[in-house]
Image (cartoon, rainbow, N blue to C red; front, top):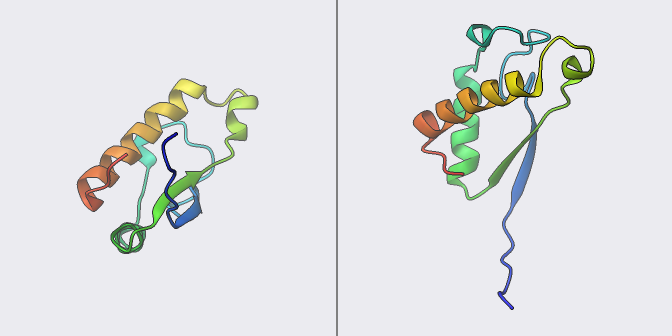
Length: 89
């Protein structure tokens, strides 16, 4: 059996922590990730933390967006992280 390794991790809420909370995202062009978020995430990542982003998207249940829409937005966010933070998944 492979031995597991412990990693320090931090759980971050997406809206209002990682990106500016503008309510329900229906247009990905409205995405704003403040430079302070990028800088903070970069510092945590370089310090060895696993960054875990959590989000509760009630807009899906309300019919304002689909799961596909949310995945598309998350792919944009992860692409930004990969470029700006040298983040790996």
